[in-house]
Length: 130
Image 1 (tube, rainbow, N blue to C red):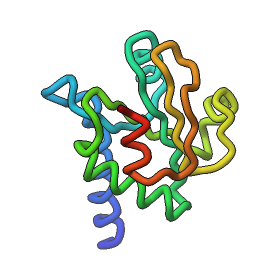
Image 2 (image 1 turned 180 degrees about the horizontal axis):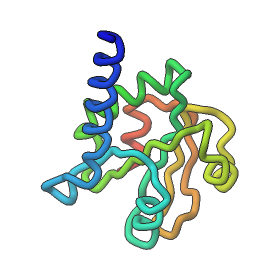
Image 3 (image 1 turned 45 degrees about the vertical axis):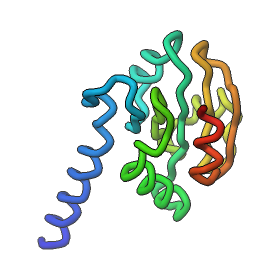
């Protein structure tokens, strides 16, 4: 029972951190949140954004996710990173040619692939998002 309570608390904290995409006071502040088709479509035609292909079983994905949750402010203003489930978003992976977890795709405001990165460091990702 104790393990279940701890797991529920962790899930609630994770969801709370990831829901910040819609709850930012400064519209230009960098944002990180869960991928949904609605969020994706809302960004098309408005601005560049990035999709991170996360896999819960991958240690690199877990580390990257932890860093993004705790350090999104490190990235340039207007940065939006959506966390897509690598094991579920088959159409999105196919659209952008993603073949491995921990990949990032930078998408221009028209929805076209600008750049694809496999497990980049935060410094490399930041330099690509300027």
